[in-house]
Amino acid sequence: QSALTQPPSASGSPGQSITISCTGTSSDVGGYNYVSWYQQHQQHPGKAPKLIIYDVNKRPSGVPDRFSGSKSGNTASLTVSGLQAEDEADYYCSSYADKNNLIFGGGTKLTVL
Amino acid sequence: QVQLVESGGGVVQPGRSLRLSCAASGFTFSSHGMHWVRQAPGKGLEWVAVIWYDGSNKYYGDSVKGRVTISRDNSKNTMDLQMNSLRAEDTAVYYCVRELYISGWFYHAFDIWGQGTVVTVSS
Image (cartoon, rainbow over all chains, first blue to last red; front, side):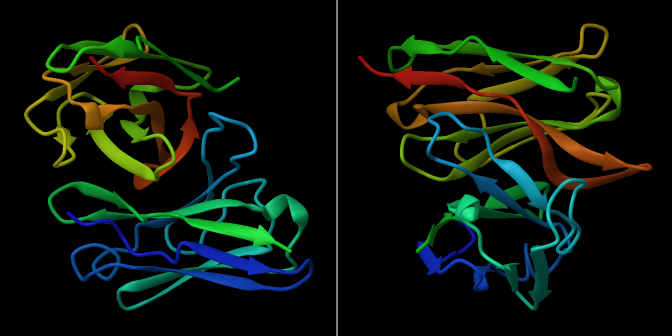
């Protein structure tokens, strides 16, 4: 099973909005609404990822509503509105896939300029 | 508080075995599917394996299938990953991860992560 495709990098200025895409196939992203997104800060080595979106567009308790998710066909997207310095991190998408698999994207490094 | 603590990592020679463990606390362990996710140095996340809440089903990623076995003990709130025939490409931080479960539904998302245990496969 191949990794989901994410752009390696994205950037934006404070206050701006950015969108990160996550492209799969009909066997994963397109076939299920089990798309989730994770934020991982790399400033602290060994920092575990944090769930920020699940079920395509649902936010866990405590995640700011600046983070939103969507899906169209085989592509899911994460939008971060009102960028803040603390949003600078790596972002990974994940999807449930056929035959009880789970697949991650390659990750996108978000830089806040 | 809700917590997952991994142990068992270390340096091991290619072809040898290693057993990782995860101790859970602060939640009803037997209600959640549990996973292992790994991250090679400087690389992205890779799903390794899942075991259902009751241990009835286990599934593995293609890169480890046939070489690893996941297990759990709900009476002790622990989960293990037995890794055999280790290769250099298995070098990674291994995270114990809880699957999100809300009102009877499993969401195939990971809401609680441990801090990870480092596995280095090198001669």
